[in-house]
Amino acid sequence: MNPFIPPSPVKSTEHDRARRNVLADPEARRFDAVRLGLYFYVFFGIALAIAAFRGVRIGNEETGPAAAIGPSIMSAGAILALRKRRSGYYVTLIFSIFLLLGVPIGTILGWTMIRGLRRVQHVFRRW
Image (cartoon, rainbow, N blue to C red; front, side, top):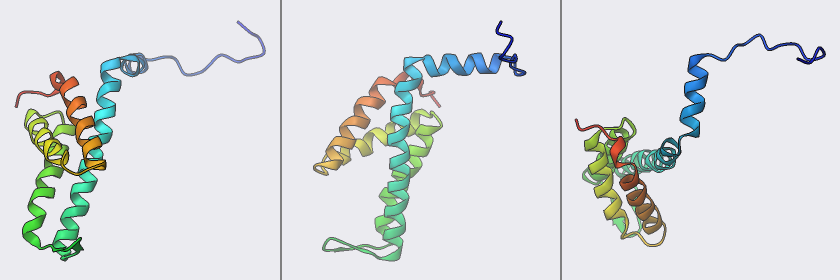
């Protein structure tokens, strides 16, 4: 023990050790990558739903309240997937398949989410 460095007053607790184990776990890191995409789905879906309710013109199309249904379901599915629900997994997977049609960003995000969701499929509870 070095006499010039005082001992740390904080002892390592069981919680700290468990947290370090989770951070070292490759499965937890893999779900963290999927979690980033799920947050994007939540915020993107909310932004599109707000734009649809406000009647914003997207491209040549006029939007209305009916156009907010899809983005709202996408956001709700991503929130359920963040809570590790199996139904959120399926909803997010379906929207990722639809997102594949949006070249180039949608294709990249959709494929990344499909691949990531399939890798961490065992994390989601049944119901």
